[in-house]
Figure (cartoon, rainbow, N blue to C red):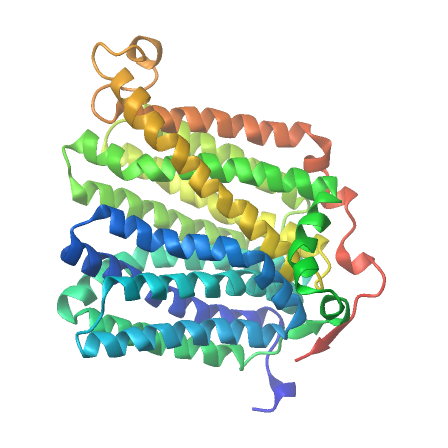
Length: 445
């Protein structure tokens, strides 16, 4: 296909998105399969946590340098290499599974390499959206990304379990390899504009790795936006971490109930993404984002903590996921509009580091707090039950329900603060759009 005939705009992005959703869903199936395979052989929850942790640490450490690379290299090449690298890693594991030679350390190494590739792919993909899609369609394009996240959470665990049972781990990996090849192919089917890379190439790698942080720090509106989302993310992770154990404790270890609640929630994410696709883009995206924060924490956290029963939890979790496209879609659109495309790789790499810090901080707090303080305190005779028992039912899982209630209240406070703090509330009007600035050049690639 002649490169001048490659589709661009929202149509071209839709092709790229379709390849990514196929690849990511297949990769999620593989991760599920690897987790089952590893646990069946080691019976160690620590090994499972470490397998996830090595990828997370790799992404964190590499992200600043990956962002610099994204701005130095053609965007098409960065995305394609990331997808192709994943295919190579999975292909190597496929060969090892075929000869029955996979060791635990090899899975750890594969996950580490995958974490490095993610550090490149996420900022490259986010920055590419801003080049391909018109400003008025950015919220919709980012909503499509949240649909992809929701679909993989609905489809991947279920299909992964069925495929693992019926086909075996080697064929599951083969499916992921083929899906990755499709994703690589879609990158070359669409037109991807390229921003001016002169300044990025002139800067040294070390300087380029940290310039994204300095770019954010020099703009109070972006600092306020980043801090707001950091707190929102940290509170959200606390709820994610205790949902399954809370439902299991409340239902007497009913795994079906726990799985159903999570599935219904992910369906809410798909519904929210579709609604956002169909509605006109918001005039003030930051206010739409802050409103989503308020609904997310009031209906998706406070209400969940106060209720009892699978229907109640599923409905509340549905509302939680329903808000995610409006929260993430508008947030990402603001960054894509405000940051010069020639800087977006480095800025989004910096964002990735800051966003990812929310996970270990939240886990470090909520685990000990829930197990040692909240859960015992919400049992009969506990110190917290007389205080919160009228709002949050006590008994098994009561402390974890209190986590939902407490983080929900704090999340509502954060959302309200966003409306009252001017640098956050008016960032979409006070900070000029990148296309209003001089010397913005892009070329077709």
